[in-house]
Length: 396
Ligand code: AMP
Image (cartoon, rainbow, N blue to C red):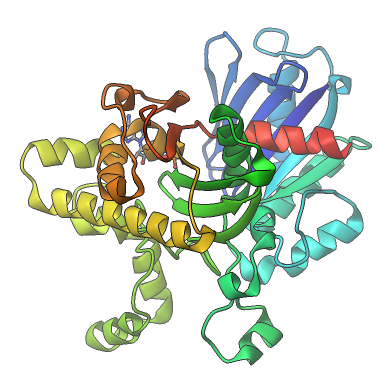
């Protein structure tokens, strides 16, 4: 069956049409600058040329209509009619404590997602717009919501509660939720198979290192801890996000620079991390180039990033009392051999050794550890769209 996977942001909409039998994308694309004067649709049919249509998409419903037109277009389309789309899988960022797994979308589910808007004010409303637009344009086609937070709902209270007065959890559900759950779930399963583990009896650490980055401890197939928190700002140093900092810094900067909380949150989300530390870029390709040129700030940003990853891995080895497999994934994890190499340097105490030649791989699954390494280390490309399509098919 053919599943349309939709990842709807506030001004963009990414899509893939996936054939669930072959698990291949028939077409991929993105609508950008929705709601602005000039928007564009970039659409690539499998094996074909990318086409770019520049137009005005005044809202997400217009954008989705354009996607459906592109998919059925006589020239660059990949299906004859919309009847060929059996289901739609939607990425939804926050499912709060309500959703511990994917779910078929009903009016009740839409309302429940809306109740989580408070927890992800930038993302959930956009996800809901996408759901409603599809419901209007594809009447009768079943839809499934796949939540970024769901996989981490198996964390025990000792992992998800903060050291705050309990009433903040009772009243506002302030706790660690964790994100990138679809990726952590998919990669942990793939890595288990790839490294010859029975997932039901395994200790896996997934390092999802992209522009946003998080690590998870997956014990017997279940997430028991993860580095992102109440929001995706916590944990690792990321492309532009600070990750963990002493919360008192917020008060200190506010007073020194007369900044509002909103301004400081913007600073922590968009101007910090590798970008802010290096004053070069949030992109590791630029960081690596700057390091080669002798840029000291780029070097320290790189070192801080790697050090934090290594410390989280160490923490999760303790949390699981061991580790069988460590998997690297996402843009940095799949492509940056220097990051992987230096992280693994810290892990020698675990008996980890990696093959430096194999570690030069980019963007494909690869066993990095040598046969005598005590822990298996691999690169496992993530595929959140395929994971969403699989969940959608499984529920239907
Ligand atoms: P993601 O958020 O998973 O799409 O990852 C995007 C990030 O991956 C970029 O910001 C880069 O830092 C990193 N990246 C992508 N390609 C490479 C590469 N060839 N070498 C190093 N880093 C890369």
